Image (tube, rainbow, N blue to C red; front, side, top):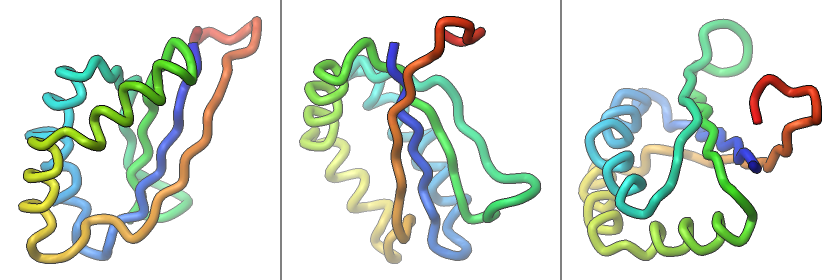
Length: 108
């Protein structure tokens, strides 16, 4: 299993809109594409309160490439993303990294 960490740096004041989009739009589209989330977090102490951090679980980088590419091209996603950004973008930038669990990790 490979985990992808994604950190979205939201535009000031847009965190509620981004959270709503994930909850009401994105997760259902991910489910249709077989994309598995391993958790979502917001910052309580340290870092930036404008950051949304989440993990995706992948069997391999090949699975990630196939499913993420299909999601990014999904017509429903493109339309709903456009609509949720009619008042401007929700994120200013993002970072991502890929993790592999160690042999002694509680998470596999």
